[in-house]
Image 1 (cartoon, rainbow, N blue to C red):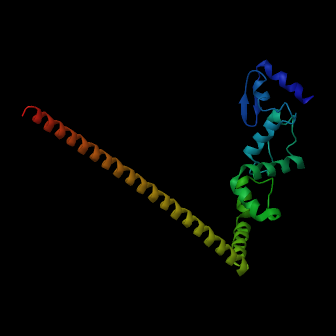
Image 2: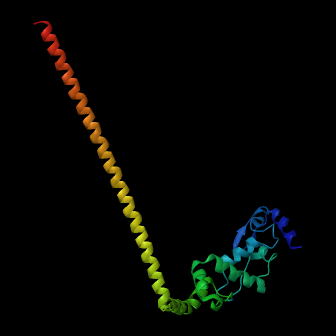
Image 3: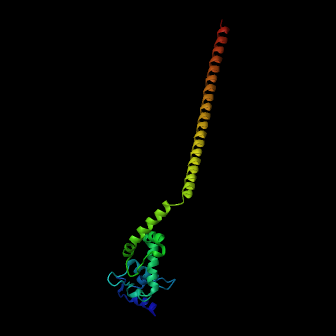
Length: 206
């Protein structure tokens, strides 16, 4: 069985894995082996990340990875397409515009597939822009009316907020004025009381 190769790594032998050399125990291989699916997901993603060989167009998962996956199978090729369309932002953008018209060759690298779709993507993007600009005038009119209403609502809210702020400011001013008047009255009463006391005191010594 292919899995039986893993304990063999514990002999301290160095095994070539996807271009990297790992020595010691089976931990190196186990770290890229998917024990849940049993399908060597770590090896597969490692091969996808490296991409196909520029000359042969074939993938290599390394000596150990080859025991778990078949790089030449249609499933592996389709998996590379799914991997690229989920990992690369540019291909994601192209796929959203081109849809089924997106060209993807699993024997080519991700940059090569991007380059192969650039022209079609530019044309489709321009067509989409033209379609948007040629919308039914009624639709455009409704959109403008909606935007005008939204703008008017926002301006009304802003005016109402400013009015509320002005009211608060006026109330604060009135409150401060009342405090000032009360303080002035209190001082005047204190002065008059003091003067009255002095008058009474002067009359007592007269």
